[in-house]
Image (tube, rainbow, N blue to C red; front, top):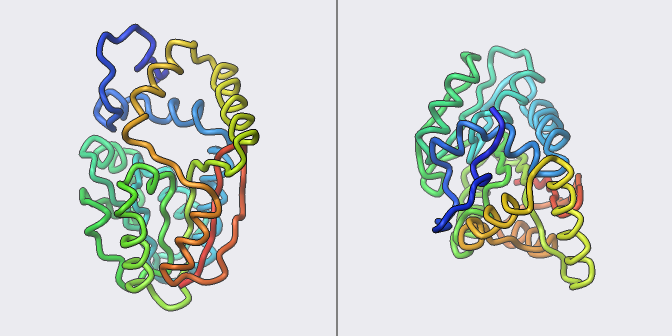
Length: 236
């Protein structure tokens, strides 16, 4: 279904939420809003599937409709792996259960800051930290590091800012042009940006890398970048 959530003038712009209206159009919304998404997800799935090997558990925290969960499972044929998708939006979890029928997938309606990932071989956080309060980010990563299996892999993707004001403006302007090229009107872009202003707070690549290291992860590397979106891999 095509995303028209912000097509018409809204008298009052409320904070963005993953409600039923957004969930209904989410695949189209994210494909047209996040440059590189259609590379980010399948490669994340491939990396996670390889790290799982023939057995073990992966957690897809903030799983939305299960695209990353499905990408992992499609790249690994072992019956002895499973992927636990977790999200706090009821409509997302219901949609994920309908979209991913693989019996190796488990979906939980939970707050990811409370979800145990004990002994996980892989933990994925795709476009999730940016929606958490800044004070919650490092404690979550520290707990994940403590609970997951030694040598386990963390895969993190986020929208990022740039320390240089000039480069920040370049990436922002290019991202806006990219959304316009994907059919969003100036009104849609403006209203969505206003809705996200209070709920999506982004960090720089440097902050992400330093936070992962402070949380105890090693070999932190950025494996992907497309405009102002980046993906990282780190090990417990």
